Image 1: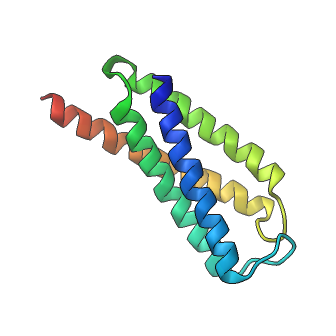
Image 2: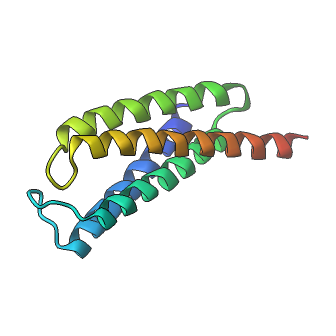
Length: 126
């Protein structure tokens, strides 16, 4: 169970971190620069997709009787990490409102991935 949650977290963090690094480089942003709307949109969309993929992997890899608990733990950790990251990374490039929005929309992506993973798992079991 812990491995499934850890896998989901690692996938989410890796995809989001790489994307933010690449988009900051592509837009030539420094930590003190104001981010253009395209940068913000790209990061929101990638966070939603990464969270969905991480949630999907978590549910698919979790033991059958622990899938719901694994999903709940991943969801709580995702929200907690979003709060911590939001406070730590609040800069003009990524203002606090942006971090809150990314966390909430990422949570919707995570829930979507969890549901898709559970559905795929149920289809395989039947």
